[in-house]
Amino acid sequence: GAVVSQHPSWVICKSGTSVKIECRSLDFQATTMFWYRQFPKQSLMLMATSNEGSKATYEQGVEKDKFLINHASLTLSTLTVTSAHPEDSSFYICSASRLISSYNEQFFGPGTRLTVL
Amino acid sequence: KNEVEQSPQNLTAQEGEFITINCSYSVGISALHWLQQHPGGGIVSLFMLSSGKKKHGRLIATINIQEKHSSLHITASHPRDSAVYICAVKELTNKLIFGTGTLLAVQP
Image (cartoon, rainbow over all chains, first blue to last red; front, side, top):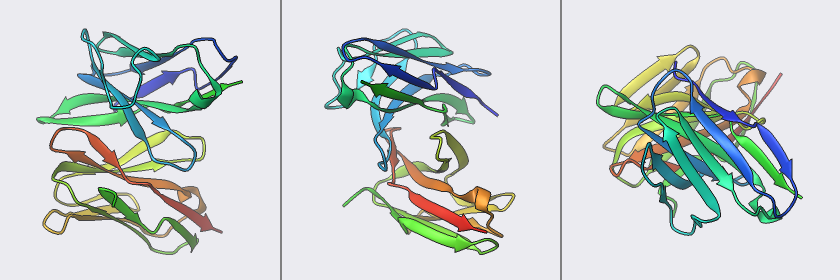
């Protein structure tokens, strides 16, 4: 099956620093990658959608200058949390979409737990 | 009212029991996903279906498009099935809308 990896799986950083999270589709080329955020005991919230070589589309209320998304290739997307603050502490999940029989199926990464001190 | 509703929110079962988790939605969809999230956080896609029924091992998923309803069944439940089960629908705009999840605990 299709595998999506994320790195790192967890990160602890100081307030004010920037953190980069990588999302890779390991055995397929992803037409689109998605970034989600999940707070404890809540469901996933879509942050942005990114296509290779173009600017990401951010959901309402998500600051594009705060959460920088780069989609450099069909197998790699990165999310950079800039000037992180404790309220940015969350579980970040990416997913990658692949076209299967005219349907875009999404495969999820294992997530990255960010803790900002 | 959420566009995707799951029930129950919490479910405790004894090992071996037959389990059903329900999902109702109010939007037009192209497909529905059932996902499993373990305490570590990683999400595994169990099923993607747009009609009828699918079976994988002890898991069965059904969908009724007319009634906008889907069910996930687990037969002969086991403690390792303990996880959060999430229903997500793919809107006609291609966005995924997630339910709030059902926390399942299977006791030995």
